[in-house]
Image (cartoon, rainbow, N blue to C red):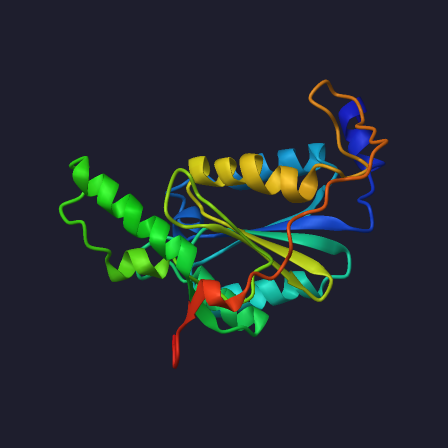
Amino acid sequence: MDHHMKALHGFRLPAMTSSIVAIGDELLGGFTLDTNSQWLAERLRLLGHPVKRVTVIRDRAREIVDQVRRELADAEIAEVFCCGGLGPTPDDRTFAALAEALGRELVIWEETRVRIERRVKRLHEAGLLDSPEVTEGNLRMARIPAEPAHVFRNRRGMAPGVVYEQDGHRLFVLPGVPMELKGIFTEELEPEYLSDAPGAISQAGGRRHRDHQAPQRRPGNVPHHRLTRLEGQTQ
């Protein structure tokens, strides 16, 4: 057994860890390499939130519901990172499935809807879209499970990043486009939720030491007047 394998053999995960659920038929079909999970696992290890497991599943609502519920039922997992399936196509079912998994209704998040409208208009003016009208596919990206702890702006795309708190766990939902996922994670999610872990490693390679109180994150539940409820929404 070489030195590297000895180090791995003696490695034990802390009691509270993270997990990653990567969603997409293209991943399991071998059409797309799952670079998101590798990147997230490395970042989370450096931030003191090591990953217990990575699961890749299809764009099937039932599979998403069942897998997310399994992750949230695991007492060793504090944070679940769910990636992919947030786009405008009919097979992008993640938000609808998560609403069922969390037992929450599906709503239109008004701030995201407005950002999508503005982005579609800009893309049309730049000659990248034929029409300035928001399509049903575009609007699907603004439909999220109700009562998020935080909705992160996506500066590189339309689908937002979202955080939910459920039964002592945090569920982070991120777009599958690598550029968008990395942008939301590093610019918004990481400094807000992950940068103060005791085991975090600095860019220089040493452990981070904090002798000041960690900044308080912004209030959890946003008032309901910021969203429009979808009455009778069915999937």
